[in-house]
Amino acid sequence: MSKIFLDTNVLLYTLDQNDEKRQEQAQARMILQRVTEDDNPVISTQVMQGFYVAGASQLGADPLLAKSIIHSFENM
Image 1 (spheres, rainbow, N blue to C red):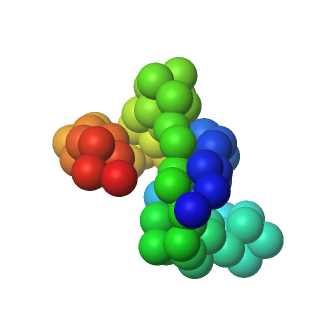
Image 2 (cartoon, rainbow, N blue to C red):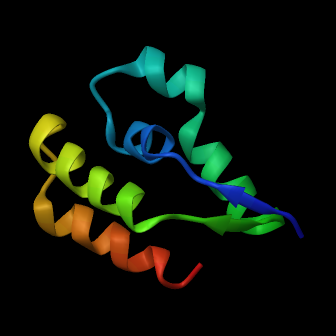
């Protein structure tokens, strides 16, 4: 298993339902699924913080949803 560093943008693309082009280009959900199954994903505190702030403020995601997603990273 190799370590893969996850970037904030890949995580945000999973929440961005308004921009189908971004989701298609990044194929974010597929990437995350493959990484979590085949590799050892690494997420920094800065990435988690950026995901929460951008997800809740810029994308309008429910702050509790963003927080729940961050907590799920602990299980990776």
